[in-house]
Image (tube, rainbow, N blue to C red):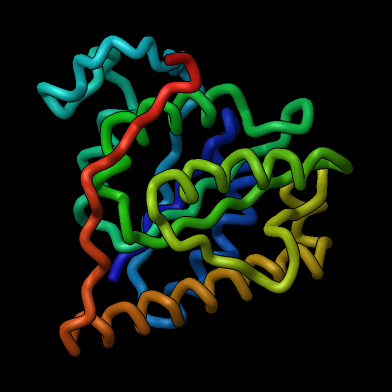
Length: 206
């Protein structure tokens, strides 16, 4: 079992990374392999809706999104982390998720998803809600914790003083490991994800 934790912050080892590391420690302690994947601090283009990825499986913009999508098949769960920018996820992570789910949303169906946000003070619940929407539109079970998955602090040292936030991260990791093991046991006994019906799309304008 493996979980990829995506760091959507422009800072490679800042507050978001500190939170994700706490989740990863709990997963590792439960025997789940982890990888922290940084989106980088370069430009990440938004999705243009060109449809090019439908034929090639790769985005026309060759950046860390393509690199991530290549790893999707080998993962059983994902944790997407972001700093809070104006009560929402970072622009980089938003563009990253738009394109990653456009390309690989089908591959992530049935795999576990969770989000983590870090902020100095406010806006965390709005950013948390934004990221979770990517899971619920792609048939991904959302992993919960003991509180909304957020940490507070202006730098990693302050985050490490947020004892409740760190405990929330550990609980998230433990819950994700438990659910992964439950799913694995189910598959061993012939229980698979329900087959998906052909999608029906209706327009509001007739």
